[in-house]
Every structure is written in C-alpha cells, then in structure tokens.
Image 1: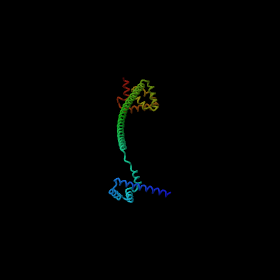
Image 2 (image 1 turned 90 degrees about the vertical axis):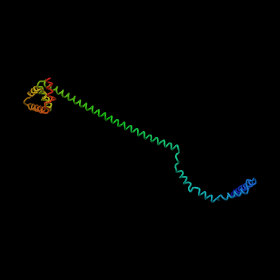
Image 3 (image 1 turned 135 degrees about the vertical axis):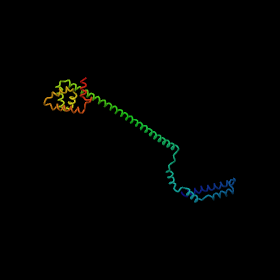
Image 4 (image 1 turned 135 degrees about the horizontal axis):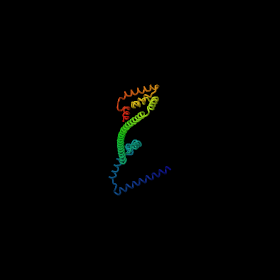
Amino acid sequence: MWRTFLSGLNAVAMIHVIAFIAFVGWLAGSGRLDLERFKAIGHMLELLPDSGEQAMLASVAAPANPSAEASEAEALPAPPSAFQVKELERRQQRDIEWSQRITEEAAVLRRQLLDAQADLAAERAAFEEERSLWQAQREQTSKADSDAQFRRVVKLLEDMPARQSKDYLVHLVRTGGLDEAVRYLNAMKPFSASEVLRLFRPEEQQMAADLLQGMTSLGEASGASDTDPRAVAQAEGGD
C-alpha cells in the first residue's frame, strides 16, 4: 500500500517538474524570459531567507502566549458606543431633573407646613381669646344670677312671717349652713332681722349668738360698701 502511494506521489512530482521545464522553455521561446531576467530571479531567490530563518522570524513576530493575549483582549471592556454614551447622559440629566423637582416640592411642602402652623397658632389664639371672653361673661352672668337669686331669698324671708323665717335659718344652721344663714340674716332689713332673732327660744340662744357673731365678722370684712348684699337688699326694699 505504501509503495503504491509513494509511486503515485513520485509520478505527480515528475509531472510537475516536466510542466515547469516546459513552462520555462515556453517563456524563453516567447522572449518573455532571457538570461538577464533569469539571473535577476536567481538573485531575488538568494535574498529570501531559508526555512530556518523564516521559522525564527515567525517565532519572533508571533506572540509569546497567544492564548494569554487573547484572554487579555477579551477581558478588556469594549469602548461604549455613541448610543450608549448618549443614553447615559440622558439618564444623568433625568436624575438631576428628578432631584431638583424633589427638592422644589420639599421646599413647597415645608412652606405650606409653616403657613398651616402659623394659621393654626392664630386660630388657637383667637379661640383662647373667645373662650376667655365667654368664661368672663359666664362668670358675670352666674354672679348676677346668684346675686339675683340671693336677693329673692332675702326678700322672701322678709315677707314671710318672722317665725317661718326663723325656722328656715335654724334649719340652715343645723344642716351646716351657718355662713349662708348669716349672709341671709345680714342682708335682711334690721327690723325683720331683729324680729327673727327675738323668736329664738332659750335653748336656741347659742345659735342666735353664733348668727350675731357671724354678722359682726361679715360686716368687718366687707365694710359698708355699696356692693354689700345687705345694702343692696335694703336699697331694693326701700325702692
């Protein structure tokens, strides 16, 4: 088998040699190849490096580690394209605009909050002022009602029979209302008050003494002012 292959290979080589010689003869016969050109071709072939030199040059020119350089080339990131650069710039601009809008909205909300707090403080101050006025009017009204009610009770005690007035005052004292009984008796007309005190029985004289002592203390504390309940009652009775 090998002999047949080698024989075929020799035949092919001989054919190529014969063809080359015929080609050279054709070039010489046609005038395309003369002696000077043949020498020039030989000189050019001498200048070419041999196979050893070609291998050395190839080894020098070739990279020491092609796979390493290829991996390094693959590891290096590819430069961004114009579209990617433009898209990145667009995103950065959008982020800047979004941040500015958030900052402006936060400032607006802060101003609105401050305004709302100021309005709330003003409303609270107005409410407190109105509440104070209402409380003062309520106290005045309550005091006026209390004074009017007090004067009505005093007038009723003066108009009732003296014994009934005395029984009412005794009931107040026995139920812990000594101060209230003193105020009523002090506001009554002197004649009506004396008639009531004259009706206290001997066993009730201590109670009468306590009422008189209370009237004395009340008169010393309040003085002879126009707002004294007794003076007011006497003035109304005189009217």
